Every structure is written in C-alpha cells, then in structure tokens.
Figure 1 (cartoon, one colour):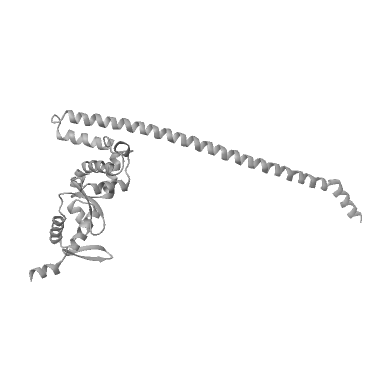
Figure 2 (cartoon, rainbow, N blue to C red):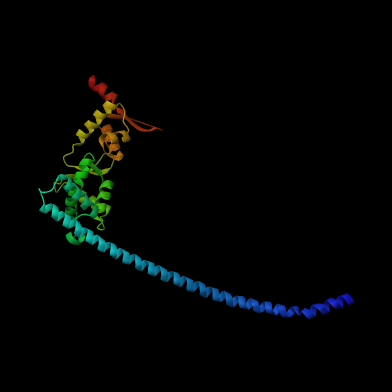
Length: 271
C-alpha cells in the first residue's frame, strides 16, 4: 500500500495532465503550421508561374532576334545574287557553284508565300515554278527522280522560316504538268508519289534496270541504289516496276527481298 501511495504521489507531482494539454496545444500549433505550409506551396506555385512567364518572354525575344537575323541573311543572299547577275561571264564556274551553295545555305531569295502571291491555284502555280527551279538539278543528280519526302526536306531547308506544308507541295506538284515545267508529279504502280524529270521515260529506266539485273544475276534494292546512284527507296521502286513489266522475279525470304532476271519470259521469247 505504501508503495502504491508513493507511485501515485510521484505521478501527481509530474502533472501528466498538464503535458497532455501541451500536446493539444502543440497539435493546434501543427494545424496552424499546416495552414502556413499551404500558403507556402501557393507562393511557390506563383513564383514558378512567374518564372515560366519570364522564360516564355525570353523565348519570344530570342525568336524575334532570330527572325531579324534571318532577314539580314536573306538580304545578304540578294546581294550575292546581284553580284552573280552583274558579273555574268566574268566569274569562273567554280565561283558560280560556290555562290549558289552559299545561297542555298542562306535560304531561297524571295520565296513564294501566300502573303505575296495570294492563295489557291495562283499561289500553287507560282510555288510549282519555284520548286521546279530549285529541284531540277537535284533530281538529275538522283537519276531523274525525287521522292516527295526528299523534295519536302530540301525545299523547307532552303526556304528557312517560310516553310510549306506537305499539302502545298502536293498541290504544287499537280500544277507542274499543266505549266509544262521540267518536273512532273508521278505516281508509281506501288502508290509511291515522286517528282521526276518530264523527259524521263519510265520504260527506258526499266530497260536500264533490266540490263543491270542481267549483268549482275541478282539485285537487291541496296545494290541497285549503289550502282545507279539513287536512294534505296527509288531503287526498290524501279525493281518493283520492272517486275510489273515482266522483266524480273522476286525471292522474298528471311534474308530479304532479292530480284532475279525473269528466265521464264526469256525462254518464252526464245521459243
């Protein structure tokens, strides 16, 4: 009994109920701290939004500076073009090529836009003329054909900020035949669309491909691309076109697609 009384007295002297009250007060303080934490989060979000707004404003300033620099580069390209015109016959072929490469890296001089040439057929007709001028030489270097993807990348690289859409490229290509331009929009039997030289004869291309196939015995698209100096996609289209004409047979296996001369047709013709 004495021991129990001693422990009770000791417990009362510690005033545990007062500490419990302090705990409640601490809990209330925690709640006040939690409310202060929400305010802190809100302030942080506002600060982040302000920082984002400043970043966007700086980005637009950079874009404005880029457009100013682009205008200066176009002006420089016009000066180079004027020098070429003034010095025609007075500069070497190497200098002319160098000037033209500089113009290509700077951008097209006076690109055709909707703002300068309106919209609809008039815009697409003017765009077709400019595309034919730009892409004729690359098409000749690529064996007379350019895929629309290749043409699109070349054109937009040269136009700088005045980009065109794939639909504009396709609409301009449809105008080329009517305008009697050196390039034509052509669709292969496989459905692939490309720009090709107006003078290019598909049957002549098929015949040259047939001769290469006869000489080599077998051809893959990669091998024909290396021999003819064209892209792998165009090489495959040539082989597929030759197949539709009866000049090649395919062997498609796990090793890939390989084309062989059509011996059946050759034997039939021999008989």
